[in-house]
Amino acid sequence: MATPPIAVRNTGLVTSVGLSAPASCAAFRAKITNPSETRFHDSKGKWIMAHEVPLEKPWRGLTKLVQMASMAIIEALAGIPKAEWTDLPLLLCVAEPDRPGRVAGLDDTLFLQIQSELGVRFSTSSAIVAQGRVGVAVAVAQARALMNKSACPRVLIVAVDSLVSWPTLSHYEQRDRLLTESNSNGFMPGEAAGALLVSEPSGAAGELLCVGLGFAREPAHIESDLPLRGDGLSQAIRLALADAGQQMHVMDFRIADLSGEQYYFKEASLALSRTLRVLKEEFDIWHPAECTGEIGAAAGASILCAAKAASDKRYGKGSNVLVHLANDAGQRAAMVLHMQGVA
Image (cartoon, rainbow, N blue to C red; front, side, top):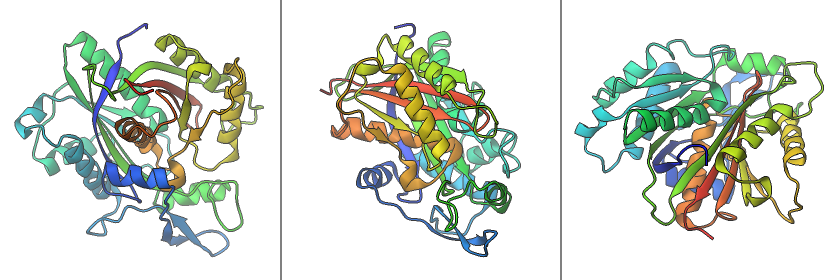
């Protein structure tokens, strides 16, 4: 293995189908979904459907992101004295700078408001990771570097995002990318927050480890006119497998950020055909977005929470998991996960 593994110690998750990681992951396993009408119409005059998180007050914008992120953090850090939170670096994953309808204040205000809401100041090693759907994978790489170079025993990774705003919805609806009554090739927007407490492995049975990471870029991204070959995702997967010292056929199942658009399902199929060299009778793929909708930067957190629940409760398809993530602008990321002691 090129670099040491990193363990997912505890999780927190807030989605439209559950206000905690156990509730959300149970909904994922049962394939429960909970979309509702938004306040907005599409170009045909029909209500746009979305997966909104039901909170106690009708918060919107930055305030709602703060509330969701704070709930996920409290869940992930349950059992850790609050006095110890100040030693934790917080890697905060948010939407990429060019994401349509991006909420103002993500880079300079969100972190401060989360600290204020929680009444705590996190470590000075904290950082903003504005990398959209691939952000959690980037944060895992940064956390691994922090633990290796700074002797930092634990890192908190938090991801929060919402696509349920008119500037965002109108942009994607104009480009026929929303799932509507007149467009089946699209995604349903959503919102969510996830928190992952990561540390060095303890060797305990059932522990979820990230043992490989890979990153690449796809020139034929969804907004380009180039023919899609799946080169970027294939390269990210190969790099993650090489980092883990594994091969594709050893992976037992996959979890991806697929949220409904044909482009990304085609890309996943192409990448599989380019990286799998041994015939497998079954190679299942999970996509939590079928329950949460498209949740942007929070997608990676929901995936790792789903993998952690499967590891803890032993309902995964095996011990080796391939995760892959993709941004609209072409960034691609892959992670190889291992469920310690799971057959």
